[in-house]
Image (cartoon, rainbow, N blue to C red):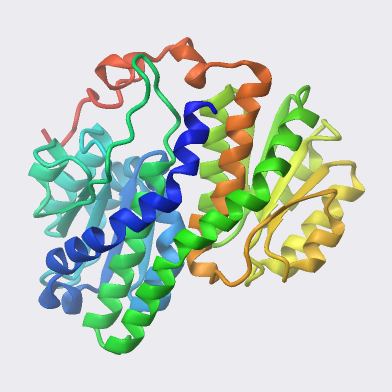
Length: 380
């Protein structure tokens, strides 16, 4: 089993281990006064952290009633922070996400948010990091270590899962404190979130063989497309990122609707196209897009629960998600079969993860010439 597969298979136990500590951390960090004062929430980060922010937007808005804007750290820091709308004391709250707490753009986003008189929260696993020191509050989400063998760096899946569950718990806390959720309703949703570990376990059992078969079948594929809408647009972006990190393939992640306006016209006929749906608000359009993709020759894969039978009926292949996960929480489960596909794709091609950092980056210095951690921060 390669190290990425080992991390993927550790996710059910990870979720069970972190749930109570994360819930306690969320409750202590988000006091009643802050929760009741917030009028607009901005959730920002880079890479997987941004994908988690996108995957949490529906949960925040449905459970707390607070308008939420997930943004890349670059978009927030350099463009949005200077013009935040007046919202009164603690009205604007900015959550910056970074496991290391050292990503320059996210540090910058929090600094500029403070300059705009917003309340800042660092969602990080690293106490004492620049981000934890910058933010007004640090929400520490430290998962048990899962060490890679010496000299190995593995595409991250544990941190993405950890960030998602922390964000969902924040949404529940906000909903309770603001009176949108009764106490028993909040606890019922927490129980629902606990059971996501079981859903992940079932997904692994059902999808492992199918994901491996797809990776073997498409050994000669030149590109891949991942589609999702609503919270699963973030899943599409995250899944594309894992394939890119694991095997270096050309990958496009797109909003389901936007595919019909753009990738529909791509020259390559048989491109494997994964359509991710929880069978929720997006389903009717996902089916139409699947029909269009199949008609023009694409190899369509449905990533969906059994209830989305209209989508599965069109697809050539199916990566089956368990029934019963609400759409707002589905990104945590929907990513699993696509993580498996990415891990097996690397095995099939005998590609080292991150292409052994041969594309201009290095492990040291936070990204070599891309300077992820050493980029100049304009707030300084």
